[in-house]
Image 1 (cartoon, rainbow, N blue to C red):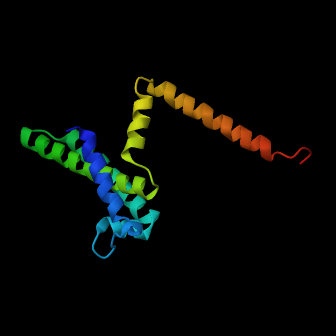
Image 2: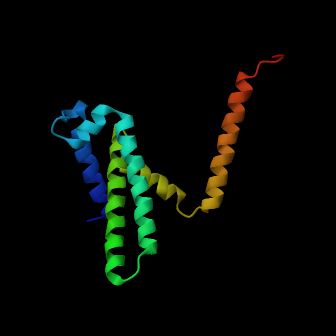
Image 3: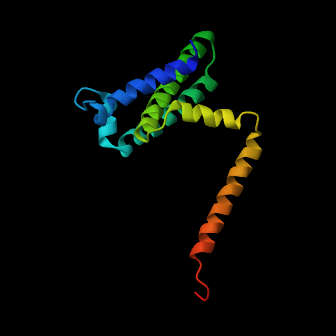
Length: 139
């Protein structure tokens, strides 16, 4: 079994929890988040991301085998929470883990600095095109 199978299965379960698929907000945490809309689940993504940072900082400061093991497990748990809520966000926007994995595969082998510079250049070009199309001569 591949690790991505777990993501795919979990994404499938989340799809069944969508209110439009019959998910009941009164009995399903996922359905409740989706029913409340983006502010609800995006807030959770932000909270979980912060908890990942805090858990990583705790791990960085930990000493002793027992503390290191506890902090490692805490970081894994917080990261799982972040991934879970991120999967909910993807589902809301009709995206799948496969889309994220495809983007990661696309970036594989690219220098992170080069990839970031390319994204900035692409965004600048798009911004310039918008500005040029809305510029009125003599205005």
